[in-house]
Length: 293
Image (cartoon, rainbow, N blue to C red; front, side):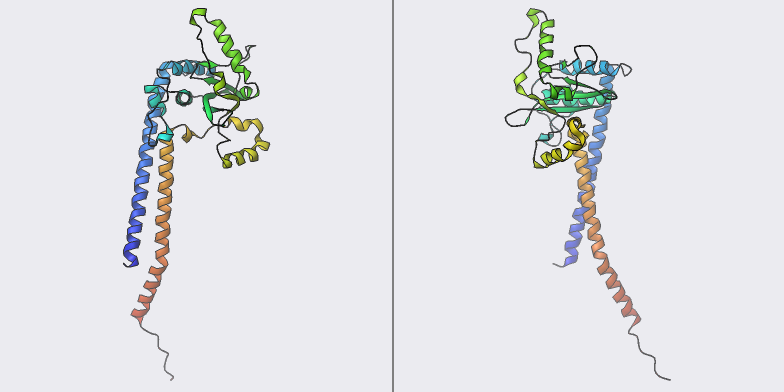
């Protein structure tokens, strides 16, 4: 078969991929916006936007913890590895990672920057528990655990402990759990309130710098410049919002397909121009040298 038909099929496929990917990205972006609007309405019913930031954090913490369902939410959007969206967790509950995702999204809708944080287990260095760190003021942070309705106030009443405090002194969790248990009546004290051994809190971080060689290389490269602050770098939003992740992937694929289509079109133009010049030369005919006088 001649090149022309194959080239036309290739361009048609690239054009179809561009249009389809852009449509998927637009649909997911629109759906993401609708989810945000729905969650914002619910958050406004839970706590006033005029409440102090720390009060908003605690109100939303207690609200998310009280949602029914403590096992992993099996729903997902687009791809199972992306897990449940915040709105799906709002509907069906979930484990520590699911509820942390919902709490972080709810805090952002209430005007409080928040990001999920991971606690790794010691044997394998894989995520074993999930927390949330909220920014309640310039240089002021608050770490909370929606799975257990836990936050870490300072003993002197000067504020709350943050993620870096937890890394430096993981025993903060033990002290807080002991204080909470002591404040409860004996008949209401749970036999097992908190699985302290489930995660190493001195490894708490927003990004899993132990995930692969690339992340470990980045960790070593950035540690000297950013120090401990690199452990609280806010996670990219698409890592916490499945619909946003699919929208970003669709947009990226649409750009790649459009680039392939553009390169293919540009590659054929020199041949077309050369053929046009030859045709123009044929119409004019061969040049003849002027006869001598």
